[in-house]
Length: 506
Ligand SMILES: Nc1ncnc2c1ncn2[C@@H]1O[C@H](COP(=O)(O)OP(=O)(O)OP(=O)(O)O)[C@@H](O)[C@H]1O
Ligand SMILES: [Mg+2]
Image (cartoon, rainbow, N blue to C red; front, side):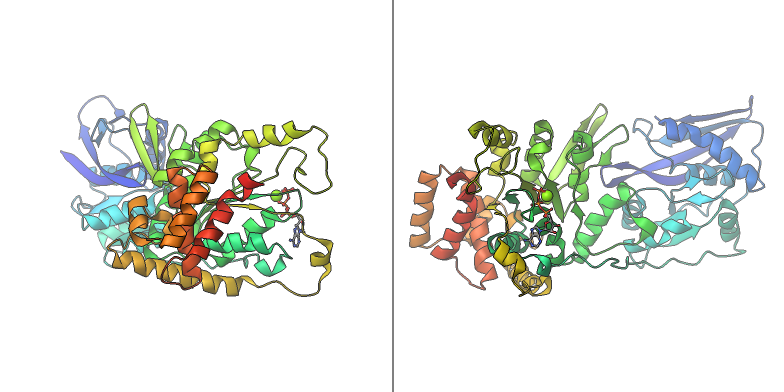
């Protein structure tokens, strides 16, 4: 007889159904796992044996075959321990074999029979819910599974013994509650920043429309400081975005205690990051920093210090909002709609362009340094701003700058306007101007004659690409949204153009 337990395999953030089939047949004692298991799955036989023994169960000295179907889908990870153990328990009569028919099981086993949480509980629970099935998982993973909805049946246990008691009806496991992560440390505030009015304005526009921003300036001007304050003016994640973001975090195993937070992700990888760390990959494909920054911010500090090949690998995800990782046995797609914020010095010594400074290495210093960032990459940056050193007068002036809370109010109002506009245009899935396609933005931003004339002249003078043209339109729309203006006017376009060409003109 064959006993079956349902579980899942992960491809990107999707959970693919996998059937764990166990057969105990006469023959020489043997324990076989088939169905393209990786090393972690193969080793599961040792953990399962030990966990069953620790729980007071022993397997018969027979030939035990475990098939993970479909057999041609690679199986990775340690979460197959629990479904294998449950199928074996059902096969030897330790639990009723029909009790698991409507549940998906996943979890890792310790040698003492305890259950440990694994990555990907949330996508698994959502997939189970879609099939009207329940989920069996470790107790610590329960709160994460509870985010899949109120209707889903969740059995979250500490150990195999507790599960056996639950299925026998002796002691039922309580349903876990969905938990929100306490917001923890307060975010750094824009009030700490003296001067830098121009850069603050660029940051506000970037936050309001989800645009990409590059800050260029000498050391100590406050670029990293400004970027670190962006989360304090971004609106919280909507319910839909929260689930999307958490799915990626869940697959990456980054959801601590199964609690979700509605703070937008802010990822700032070091410039030594490899291609796999940034875009995703590795032997067991993990989402990279760009996917962990989905619906949030990817901050690349000291931009030219990143490897040029790594930077160029961001070009495609920056356009499409997702990343496809090719593997020997297929392709994995992760979402990656992030807002890029970058900071850099104008040259290696950092002072090029500062009045009164002559670079020892001459013109080549700036050209070599800036040349590490490719033209096509820069073309994807909507706002570029020169951040000059803050003046001594600004530093010692007693007045305080505008705090984040006030800026955040304007940003929220501008985002609300965008959301309503896209919903009215039949695109409720789009929430920011930056995320809108070029055709849609052309329809929604019909520049008047004066603005069109300005755009035409600027496109001629600064050789703007078609992409740059659309990006200027999007930024103009955001500037108009911040000003609560229904139409995009000439001065909105002029400001957007100013931010687009401020570096090339300097
Ligand atoms: N505008 C400012 N207002 C207040 N403090 C500032 C400002 N700019 C810089 N500082 C001070 O200088 C420190 C360094 O700033 P920050 O790290 O942001 O500089 P940076 O522009 O990123 O420099 P680098 O190019 O070397 O990375 C800050 O921690 C802060 O103490
Ligand atoms: Mg810095």
